[in-house]
Image (cartoon, rainbow over all chains, first blue to last red; front, top):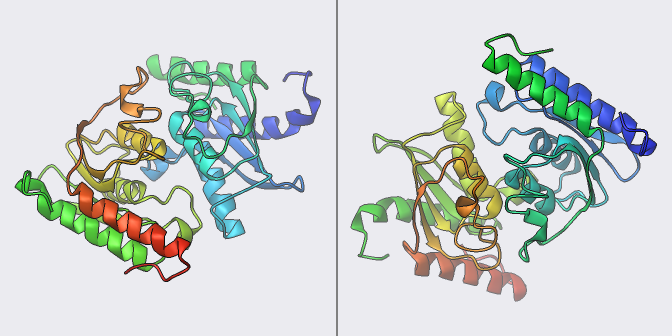
Amino acid sequence: MSKKHPQFTSHMEAALAEARAAAARGEVPVGAVLVAPDGRVVARAGNRTRELSDPTAHAEVLVIREACAQAGSERLPGHVLYVTLEPCPFCAAVISAARIARLVYGAADPKSGGVAQGPRIFAQPQAHHVPEVLDGIAAREAEELLKGFFAAKRGGGAAPS
Amino acid sequence: MSKKHPQFTSHMEAALAEARAAAARGEVPVGAVLVAPDGRVVARAGNRTRELSDPTAHAEVLVIREACAQAGSERLPGHVLYVTLEPCPFCAAVISAARIARLVYGAADPKSGGVAQGPRIFAQPQAHHVPEVLDGIAAREAEELLKGFFAAKRGGGAAPS
């Protein structure tokens, strides 16, 4: 865990724990934690696309939907989203729609990322809301989790838990 | 309804009916219908973001999630999605993730569209799957519904039903 941003480490550690739990369920190991303006953790989740047969059940979407349902609102102003991997274009667009104030993420995703690469959703003139973005937080840990998971899949072994 | 594509009219009419029902509920009037490879309509929905307090509850996402749950799969190969408005970047990314074979849509959406404008999700080198796209089907009807809805909102009147 990076020591450069100690204020982020506990939430990112919780997100990494969700990513590990996702791997143990055979899901792509990505985890997310959503923090309210008062500092309370309002939702935490790992990917569940396979379990739920739902291509939208990415960790980020699950925590945003849960927090919106709790709040009775489509929007979450002032909230901070921690996620272990760069959000895909789909998640980035939901983050913008939900008016998330700040996005803190771990590893870059050259294959499917939509924030710093690909369609760069927040840089589009269409983006109705652009969160503050902090990247590279606990990136090494997040990346190793993903690499281990896909190496085990290719090797036909069990997903690492 | 356009006479140029008679084979699409009944499904697009059903999508327009969903859009009208959404307007009557105070939701942005967009409707979608999902058709299986055997021609069966497997899901139909209008927007429900307000009702469900869910920023992801766009018509396209609702029909894809429902059909995936029915199929017990994250993917819907061979399926055709009819939607009254150009999908946003978020919906376009979900359409790609779900491996929808063909997307038929009505009105263009210069403000929030993600197919023919903005991030042009399907044109990104990252797009893992690109559906066949047919646009402009029943575009006038879809556009008039949206214009009427937003004019009524601005005027403080009731949403048109």
